Image (cartoon, rainbow, N blue to C red):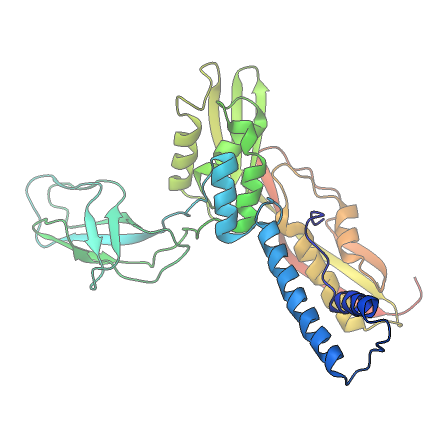
Length: 359
């Protein structure tokens, strides 16, 4: 729902107002499509329509529900003290090779720096890589020093001098994330008031967890016993870097109350398949209804939550779009119970249909 200050735009309504105003001052004037006065009024109407649209865009910048881009950034900074998350840095596998076996332990330290041939992109070794005496080849993980979901580029030029060592990147940089989108940022702003102090409530723990890594899509907080807090998170890709960021954020001294024993868990995915037969009315475009049903099924279950059960009724309701006469569901054959440490995700879909008006 738009704020009242945002005006509805109608060229016809504006022109009607201008014509009425002109007739007030010139009672003898009869508007005609071809006369000069009418052409001028039409030009003024278009101009006013443009100005009202411009004023609407300015007004939207002051409301959380309608602000976007840099306007949203300014609003979040001024009113909530929040900044848009830049995203997460992607990682890649690298092969480290010694030119000859050594009789002693050889350590490549965490933070070992590499660049691409142009010198534009840099990557750092995530953890120490240790060659024991006689070993010549090991694998390590490197992290690109920029926030992006994916980048197929090689960083194999050593900018940290180390003798006897050669590095070959094995995979592209992946499993990072781009900067926080407007909608993701707005959702985090809405829960921000809960974590203005240390954590404690479920909402405040969730707010801090979302802040830890831009890739996180859902968080659930439970307390199995007094003083024990379990934070469960889920993202399309969950790695050790994400787990480390969540732990470091939630266990910080200015976040976690001293009396809370904190544990974090990556949600376990529970895949469920859908097999169904649809009966579509003869009075509709059957192919269009069929495609719409499949798309709606994907849309409904694209945002399942941690611990959210999957009922047969919800699957049927997702497939029951306009023009559908009946849905015969074979799979799932019963309601699926999802615990607080798991999340249901839609798997394979096998949906057939027939056209007819008999149930």
